[in-house]
Amino acid sequence: MNLDLSYTLLTFYKFVDIPNPTEIVAEHKEFCDDIGLKGRIFIGEEGISATLTGKNGQIKAYRLYLDSIPYFRDIPDIDDKSCRVDSHKFNKMIVRYRKEIVALGKRYSAEQIEKATHKISIDEFKKILENDIDSHVILDMRNDYEYKLGHFKNAIPAGTIQFREVPELVNNYKSQFGDKPVIMYCTGGIRCEKLSAMLEEAGMPKVFQLDGGVVKYVNKYQTTHWLGNLYTFDERVSCPVADSEEKIVITNCHYTGKEADIYFNCRYGPCNDQIIALPEEYKSHFGFCSAECYHNSLNDLLIRNDFTFDKFNYKILRGQIKADATRYDEISRKINNHLRQKLEGITFNHAKSNKNHRLSPLSQID
Image (cartoon, rainbow, N blue to C red; front, side, top):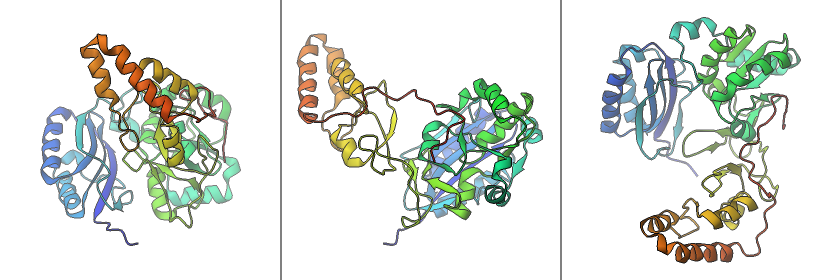
């Protein structure tokens, strides 16, 4: 089947000092809305970070618009990291001011980042993976849920659930990696480029970044040295990096242990843990990741809507309780009966939520 690839997904960033970012944000949003783009763009004193989709003609118009703004000319790798897609991958257009375009807990100037950046090209990186891997540490600076879905062979996880946790782990990296040169990578390069300034300040001078990140690498080499799918921050979430005949699946269903590579969220609101599962198993477990989350939902009714297999509108039902507390018993009983009926005979392999589990920076799951 031939897909209509008349849309382009554009992902890019640029560290550039912007003294008046809030003035640019409103104009940027108006332009993107006018031409019909959808995605997320963050603009701040550090620069710009964006992922968006549009018809190919819309993307051309947006590229011309970027070039008309002095701050956003000559954006690196904007072509190498773009790809054709079959539709919009976002449901709306968000353009916002952010103090940090990537959250690390500290803002750096473009000059500070440029001075600390030591990039390795994707070709150099491929040679190291093939010929000199034992002399280097390959550090995946994405979060654990991203690493779990797919990563470079022999890479070790950063051990984070959120990127802003990295500063707390720097001393661990220094003691664990010793004098070995470290090559770090992330999805598109932005996290590593900013982190380079922090690591150099912390006394780690032998740290290099994969130029353009995973996206640039797999756009050229696909599954060469890459295992699994690529986690993306759009509606695809789990994106194969090659055709189905060539892709390598390294993950298993949360419920059965069978091979799977699709991410879902636990439907118990306070958990919301991301789990990899077969769609039919996620549906049969009604979207709960564990017995704990199922039983908690019976008590506090904090269940996320998913109308693809569950017609109950829990948000509206909770609103009815809020409006009239005397209806709590009635609505709670209705929801409990519904869940117990749907989950009758279903068992959970996990007693508790795994939400806060972190991978060790010394662990590998290849």
